[in-house]
Image (cartoon, rainbow, N blue to C red; front, side):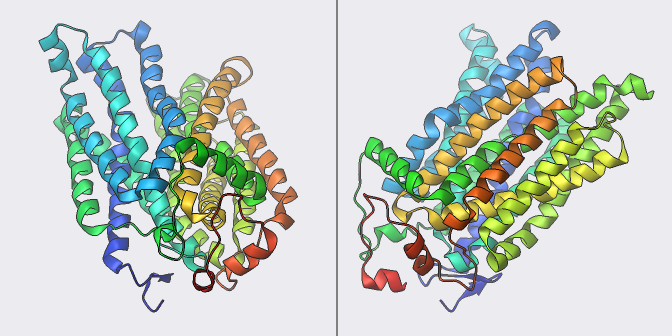
Length: 460
């Protein structure tokens, strides 16, 4: 491999334009992905006319559609990805998302035309949007894994995570302000434009690069059920993948807990500190923004450290930092204190490190023929974690203490940290200086259904 981009080894079958297209597509999709979250409260209030009495329940139900859809369909989509390729699913998801955004924006007019409540169409189009995103979003990480080999994988995973964070940041900083000028319905059309633009980029500049489809490693197209059984067998035999799945479950709550409960906590205690709810919301937003900014800036450095020192070293460091940050926030009574800002910095550092390390390790350890299934099931586990932490955290917030949801996340991170340490010796060390396949072959037995590698493939 003679070609390089940002220190990433480029296979001979790929070009730099493929990587640039993947980076840009990742940022654009994340910008569009956050639009429903930004506009939904105002859309329900002003456009649909939901009453205050029903607003909380309806808003929560619509937001949960995406989580439930992910849990139900991600594993199935992962199986399709391994059998039919990443690009076709990504294109299908982007096209469906574009249509869903357009229909979403016209839901009040569609409801009026058909003589039905527009709320029903919001539920329907939110499901269509979420279902389409299930096809599109997981392919981004899987393509990043396909485009790299173990020695430089951390760098590409870090760049992908950075583009995700950049897309989210632009969405909240720019698009959230744009909706004040053009309105929420038109912002949904902006989402349609972003996803269709991404569709064109993927169509013309991204290609599949799946080693298991090469002549050296012939792919056997199993049924979806057999594919899931193979994933279970692989995870059972590879402790490192168990660490990745546990980490995904705990990490799912990081942004949910910090973004949702910190703001609510600040508003609830604003009177006790003699500040207005608006001021409290702004102060809470500073902490959330600080944590996100630290995560965004530190991600590329975590990528370099992952390749230099190893995956498990960075995963455990990230789990410790974010677990400590969340736990200390949970022990605090003043959400506006300087200490909470410092703890927010710890969460940002830890979230970025754990994310880069986990995605890199999963890509290294997963057999290539079921790589898409591994990543999709990991995302589904994360969605289950989101439901658990959000519901249980809400109970703790209402009945135990405003800061207790943060303690819950911190304890969960420390539990996963202890599990990771217990599996440390069973996970191969993978760095840019260590040929992963050679070391991995000594420490792990292949999955029962995985095809044997030829000598040429092993050398590659």
